[in-house]
Amino acid sequence: MIAADLGVIDYETALKYQYEIHLKRVESRIDDTIFLLEHPPVLTMGKSGGRHDLLVPEKDLETKGVPLYQLNRGGKITCHYPGQLVVYFILGIDKYDNNVHEMVANLEEAIILTISDFGVKGERIPANRGIFVGNNKIAAIGIEISHGVTMHGIALNVLEDTSLYNLFVPCGLTDKGVAFLQKCSPPGTSIEMKDIKKSFLNHFSDIFHEQVDNVLDRRVFEKRHILSETKKLYMAGCA
Image 1 (cartoon, helix red, strand yellow):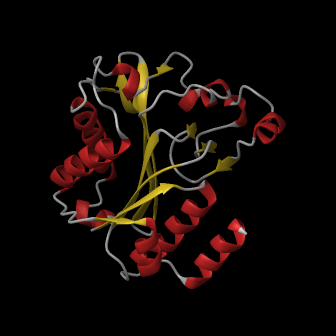
Image 2 (spheres, helix red, strand yellow):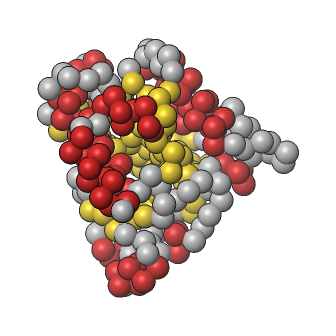
């Protein structure tokens, strides 16, 4: 399995990388791959989402510089921001007996164990995917499966930032709030993103019986696995 830490990366570039690695995985040209990253402020809408869950006109999102992407993943509207851990999974489901429900449940378990390392008890709510602390959602899950390979993944609220949550109904849940690991952890608990990533990878590896020997940084990953065409598009966008 390949793991890459992409740091803070804009959503469009990360999505292009997902599509490229997904295609390679479908064609058996690369191993299962996971991305750990953070995004600048952005909203994404899954298959079951609708603009009725927006609390402001879309033009207000443009004014605030917050893009909205409509995706083919499961779930409704969620947000990403610096200080939230996002993990994308490009996994062949045949290795997991094509049992998508079990795979998602295992991802939830990895989140529960991760936040437990920082003194927070996470729980499932049967009617909703994701992980909750009391009545507040701390982690969202949205997976897409195409040609037997997954895309997209999880978002775990680490550092507290409520600014984007005023723009939409999180995951369409009008009777639930949002939680942040930083706020839920016992006083004095050190909350560093590098430690959260390490904890999650350890639990993911144990649950999925996958060995992650090292984590590639963005530069090394791009050099080894991203096509020159995609690199040119990315560099052009940075110019």
